[in-house]
Image (cartoon, rainbow, N blue to C red):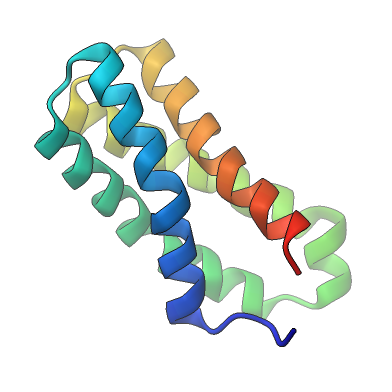
Length: 112
């Protein structure tokens, strides 16, 4: 299977991460519209930058330290965005950011 194109990667990110955010919103009663906006904003801001960084670095760097650095930065930015739009506590915004990104990261490692 050839590598994903940028639009395909963004689509998969949204398909995998948005439901996680929506389920959290239902559980925490944050409002579905606000959660949907938060999910789109978080991925919309971080995905292009993360993709560009990943594509710019040598593969050996990406698999040894780059992936971890990029994902850590993405989690930080997305925690801020999710927390701001959904009005989440510190623990919830970090937990949601890490969970949503873990789902798509796991899929990226498992699915070729």
